[in-house]
Length: 102
Image (cartoon, rainbow, N blue to C red; front, side, top):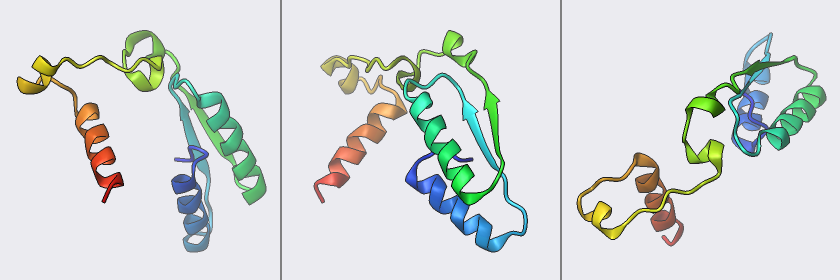
C-alpha cells in the first residue's frame, strides 16, 4: 500500500531490500486530497522503478459520510461527550493532541 506519504515510502524502501519483486498498490476511495497523494505515489514508484497498481473505489464517496472523504469535521456537543456518544475518530484525535504535548 503506497499512499505517497512518509510511512508507506519507508515501507516500500524496506520491501525493496527484503524482497526480490515489489509492486505498489494505491486505493482511491474519494479522499479529499487523493489527487496529491496519487501524484506523490506515482513519483515515488517511478523513482523506485516499481509498478504502481491503482484500485479505484471512488464509489465509496457516494455511500460514506467519513470526514476523510467529505472534509467536514463533525460537531460534537458537550452532552455527547458526557454520554460517550462519539466516534473512535474523536478519541483518536484527542489522544493525538494529548500525546503531542508530552
